[in-house]
Length: 167
Image (cartoon, rainbow, N blue to C red):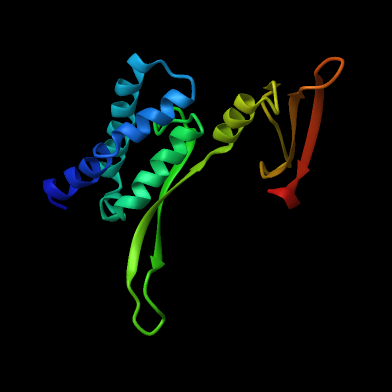
């Protein structure tokens, strides 16, 4: 890929930076910090496009919508945070007789991203590190997970267990 193509991904997103900034402000960010945070998210996507060349082939609208979804959920593309999976998906924009294959960007929250979203929404208050159960050969056969849920008159811990059928 040429440098021009790589810069095009970022250039397309920078044209929409005001909408990204507006979403960040809706999430309670101060106006003076949203410009830097929006540029930071664009920088993370640019860095990801260096290691994943397919990102440069994505339809521009899919890139914009995916980044908006991350910002709307108050998550980040920062790979060290581990809050989202960044992946591409092919789809046929044509017909079966005359296929027109396109590449779109898809960003989904990881397990930690889902926990972050739920904490922000207030559906959970806290959680404990999952406990994993293994058999003698080291294969995972189940686990236990505890979350603190809001409740009246006081919050309560709920335990969720899972076995190999859930994995």
